Image (cartoon, rainbow, N blue to C red):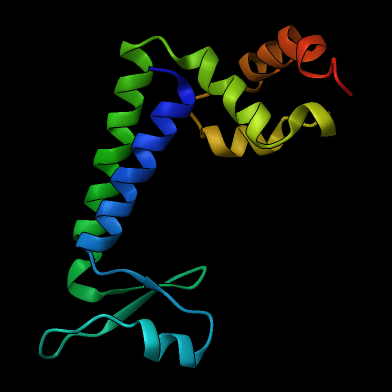
Length: 133
């Protein structure tokens, strides 16, 4: 498995969790009315920000599911020795080789990754990644 495949599997797991938790997205009142999911009696929606809404009864399963998915990803990275591949994936995904700034990749990778290790992977791959520029 490569880093991009891991990301695809994670996206599939998150999409399944979104469906299971009846989350929906709306950026206007009309979209809210169109996209809202059915509620149980006396249930209300919770606004998660960024246009995401979820029935209140699904909030804890959502949080627990995200923790489980993130732990699964960490385990996969460790077990399959994908740490460097994942860093390189995020460097490319966030166009760090074009901008010269690794901060977007750092945000995507999260607190388990250090600036030093990301910068090291950036430097090792800079010539190859920018050869066609």
